[in-house]
Image (tube, rainbow, N blue to C red):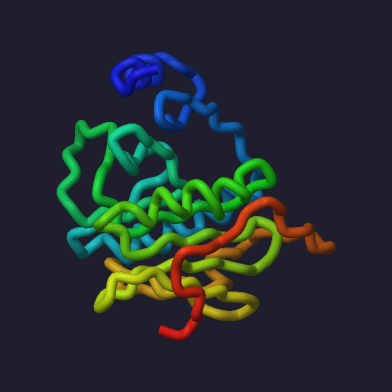
Length: 199
């Protein structure tokens, strides 16, 4: 499927699809837990963006990651002009994905690599749907290298562009997490950048 065919197909489809190099992938529905986490982040970042130049979008807005790749992130921060009629945003500054059993491996693998290739992206946040944990991948402003940081328990997550910190209490507000920890997804490896948490 070409990009033009994908856009025409998506206009009439009742289900959203992500597009990767000619292939389309249907997006499954989410759980209440997943939706609450994403909504908490969307609301907090939208409030922070109200008086600035950045826009914050939900998973209804498609993001162009490359010429042949389009995703629907859970939350996207864009600090370049976006017209009211736009159906795609480009040049994201921050992207947030909330994991689910079916997407965790992709969020940590394929999407991590794809998002890091965007020149304007300053941070990619992967929020765990099973326990209070956020994996923050951020580009060092001085040297351009990517660094990984894991925030657990009671910490806070710095969000560039909006210059705001999201606390884990805000992210997981009114979210009931499993009483028994679910295992990490297997089959993905994070590599190719500095894994030091110190910034």
